[in-house]
Length: 252
Image (tube, rainbow, N blue to C red):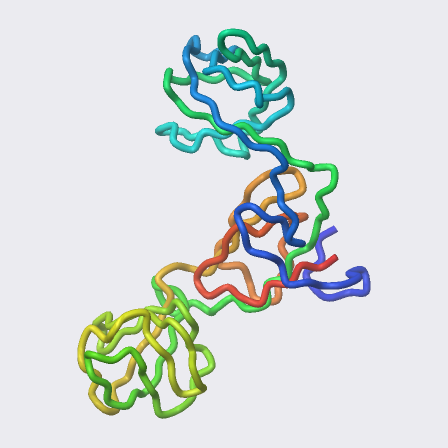
C-alpha cells in the first residue's frame, strides 16, 4: 500500500541514519565481508576461480564496482551458489558472468531476515529555480575577501549549508554553517569583495535526491521527490541525500 499522507496506520516515526553501512535504525547492515581476486574465468561462465580465501561462503552476495564499463552492483543479485576451497577458491555463481583475471570482488553476507522496513517521508525538498536546483537570495552587508563570515540585512530561512554563493553571477564560495538568522560562514574565505547592498544568490549545484536500499535488497535513487511525499517503496537503508533534501522521517 502506498501512503502519501499521515494516517494512523503509521505507528511511529524516527529520523533515519544516512549511511553506506548502517540501516535506518542504526544497526550494521553487513555481518561478514571479504575480498578476493579472480584468477581465471571462461567467457560468460558460472564458474569463477579465485585466489584462495576460505572466508568465502555459500550464499554471499558479490559486487565488483571497478569493472568497466559495467560494474557488478547489489542490484545485479549475483551470489555464490557453491564454493570449493583447494589450491584456489572455486565458486559457482547463480548466473553466468564474464570477467578478466585480476579483478577484485567483494563478498558479503547480510542478515536480511532481521531487516526492519520503513516508509520514508520527505520533509523538505527545495523548490527548483533553474538547472542549479533550489535558488534563493539575500541582500548582503559589505565583506572583505579575507573573511569567511557573511552577514545579510534581512533573514532568509531558505539559505542552507552546502549551497553555492554567487555575487552578480560569480561564485564566491560555499555555505558552511548558518550561525544566526542573518549570518553564515563559508567553507573558505571569500573569493572576492562583497560590496554593501550586493544581492547574493544561493543555490545547490545538484537537484534534491535520496538514495535508498529497499527490503528487496535493491538500490534506488529518487531525484527531486515532492516535499511531503512518502516514497512508494519499503526502505531499510538511506545511503545518501543531496541537493538540500532534509527532515526525512522513517515511518513505522
